Image (cartoon, rainbow over the protein chains, first blue to last red):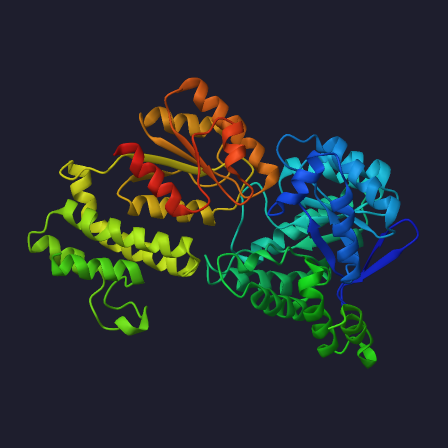
Length: 280
Length: 222
């Protein structure tokens, strides 16, 4: 199954059998206080800096989140999108809990964006699915619902199916739904990553959908975070992860290595490209 | 210090829950916090001595090591579990009123936020600091916080948020609680939270780590 995202004239194809597409996570104020302060000053310079460094590190898509206390993200999200659009031709993943901010950003973004995210809660599906349909956007479906987060992979699969069904009913194409299996910290629950991996396996096998995940959180509360993230990334890709949201400066090497090992990088072209570009 | 209290403190500090627990490996087959706390009580040690001379100082050590990044989340969770296995034996004394705790502490993550690890660590540390903890869980509405504060007069409130997008809900909860209970004390924490934000929304204290929260509570009652 192919999910196609577009910038202005650029296009990224996410295939459910890989190779892996990287959605850069860095334009996000959580844990990045400099982003908050520069945005408060009304400057997008740092946003553009983060965009550029992630593109250099092989990000294929950029996640854009500018939500923090005291900000009107109905205004700020589209403004940030326009600032990025002005400089870079890359598909965007619009990240906000506020459907109005998502809609305002979709109005100006052009291309074909990804919405981060819809979940299985009635309120979320009812507010966001019509917006995705109207603007022709793809969506990330987070596998939690009105009952909260379940630790049963079969139940997460059922939520994925529910979101898919409702999206199709709302007029969204099947391939434009990407599933997030939920990745949680392994420091607090030794089985957390196993549950995620099993969910990935089920969604990949039974639904054949593209799969994303915010994969940097699993290492919270532990040292050697990059090693943990890379190990989890490789295993997730083996099970069917196709478009992680992560920091490309930290993860691209592991992603390209995994693709190579899985036999989907002939002549190691993409692996070597990353090695040469990052100039190590 | 009394030998058995010292042993309990060591079990808590290193996460030795009970005799059958395989962790930590170098304490294999030894009695854990569970057996030792029970034995201490049977031998006539006062429950508040176990609390104040074993559990509280051991958990403070754990909290300080965590603040200095000498230990990590799983090790804190082991310590907290060991503490709980000792605390179980003290609960009847708390309930009968024979042993008093330092006060009550209500905690939860604010509306919209499901990230509970930080909140759980703070709750454990504060319980280990000798307080009664009322944990409201995750995604807690302002109304639910208000209700808990009404039901527990004099309780200190702790609010947690991990995302910049949910942090805004702290402001609403703080404003609502302070309007109804101006004398109440509220401390806040979580990755995006800062001291400046704490001052701005009118909360009383910001701590970057669990031990800071324990220390703040300690000076409130001293």
